[in-house]
Length: 564
Image 1 (cartoon, rainbow, N blue to C red):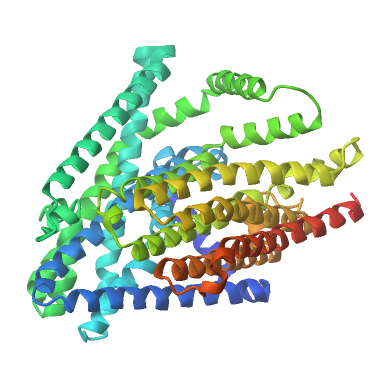
Image 2: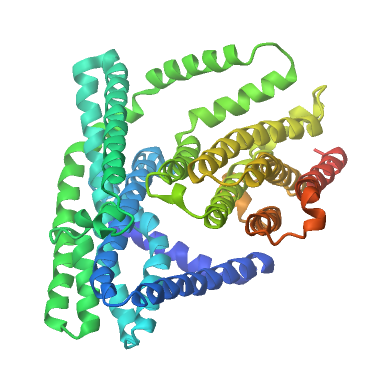
């Protein structure tokens, strides 16, 4: 049997073992995950159902819009799949500890590449089924399709996600090949060349985006709106040579009873998977061994860059003492790990790009009521992202200190002080990001002055509450035996932290949003209108103090009593 098949069978055994021991997991964890999955599926299906109902209430134009919206929807998923495949592929093929361990085993490089590529496709695409199935299911319920369409939806989705995730892996491999060539040709000048090319590409993208936005503003009409102008990328998504168009036409054709045409698109998708698999295998056979060798032998270059980064951070943190040492260590760990800062860059970068384009899409011309509603929805989405990232990065920090944490306990610095330093660093970072993005959103939407002032209190309070809760609960449920953040987060404390952070976000954003809405529409009681801002500010400060301060106090008491 080929080594790749043995590796696959071994992971299938591990998966079966994990499923058989689900009952050993904490009941709260299983309940939360099950509730979240059910709520997600039903909630997203309801949202899509309402969207289709709105489109069909527009009249005959819906029959023109729906097929094109299908293609645009699947194109958006395809782009995200490519990005997910590229990022996951780089981590699995080059940075994974399992990959480096398998390199020491009698496993041919080709079989290792096949196995990790298949693993990457599964890891980068499984979550997208929780978007595709509700989308097609909601449309099927609205149009009263047969329940067999769910089977066809899955049948079309499997090759669809494999095509786009495979394209992401292929792009990543080609980029690694280009880096290898540049390393041989340019040597030490390679990094400067790449930075220059990245800067020129960024300038070109910004210039192109601004030019496109100017064209939209010039072409926008208050009397008649052309769909292609209102939905960027619609014409590209309708290209019949793209897999997202095949996916949309296949599903709609199967629902309409045009079985032969629908099966033709399914065959196109499946055959594309076969061709792409052979292409990825051939390109990987050429490029992966050499690029992997370059990664393994680049220790001196990495050490040089790490030392330069250390000097920059050391220069920025002037002074001395334990606080500086702790901050210096945490910042270096964060900056040296691309898996951490790239997630921040992707999530907050996408939000920033969305906020920046609100004005160009005409949202600055909305009625103040709608502008205020969209503003608070944006702040809720921003707070939800911060909740997720604080659970992923802030909560495990004390546990990741590992078994050597007892040395800090013996030092003339208390563990409580270490906890507070991590809280301050996390809170300051979240405040800077959230306040910048929320202010950008408000500026683009031209929200009322009341909402602008409320934002200056709300976002820092949300940031401090999330940082305090994640840091405090991380101290209470510290697990120094865990080796990875995933093991830390999968415990009882990680699940409780996720629940409480989401509840905190809802409490902090919902009530001020209601108050701001009543103020905008003029329905707030006139007798206390002048007290609306102070009362709402007091509520925000009280909730954030309880949500962030109480876990920090409990965490302090836990660390004081902890015996290492």
